[in-house]
Structure formats: C-alpha cells, structure tokens
Length: 121
Figure 1 (tube, rainbow, N blue to C red):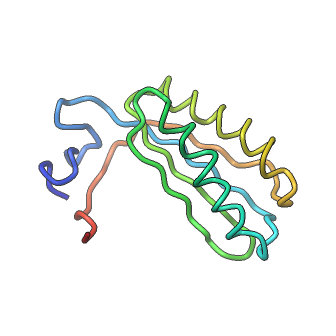
Figure 2 (figure 1 turned 60 degrees about the vertical axis):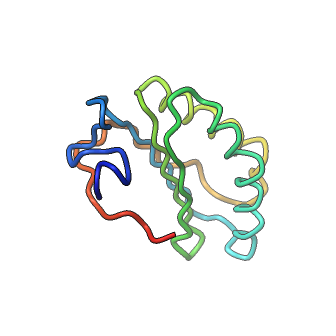
C-alpha cells in the first residue's frame, strides 16, 4: 500500500510516525441463520460508538462461516483500542446476547507490519 493512498508505512506507523493499534474480537457459536441481522445491528448501533472513540482509524467485521464472526478495529493508541474493546463488549452483551455466541477471544496490540494495496473504489 502506498503512504499517499493509505497513510501508513510498512511498519504499522502512520505518516507522522505514530503507532497504530488493533483489537481483534472473535466470537464462536453465533446462530448462523441470524448473522445478517447481527451485522445490520452492528453497523447501525456499534459502529457509531466505535467511531466516537478518540483515535478511531477503521473497523471491519468478518463472517468466517459456521457461526464464527470476527471483528478488527484500528486505533491511534492503546488507550483508545482498550476503550473500544470495552465499549464493544458492553454493546454486544446488551444488543446481541440473544444471538447465541460465546464470549469473545480478544487480542489487543500494536501493529508491527502493515502492507498491502489500496482496495479499488
């Protein structure tokens, strides 16, 4: 990915040299027949909350099939990343508890390699 296109260098820092952090949350056991409903709820309810967290960079949700859903959030510092993880856990507990998923496996850390190409528009 080019710095101009994405704003990051290959070592996971932005163009100003600041680190970028990520939180990965992986849920298993979700009712696969209700995944689309859950994704709609996440888009309308959780995403605006995460966007309000200082340092928000981006957020993705992955449907891995078989009742496995994962999300990846990117933030400008560890504190924002940890705040986002807490807010996501609270929101999921209040809004998606009836989807059948187990408690998530959560991983938080600093991105040390970030490479790729910009996605086409």
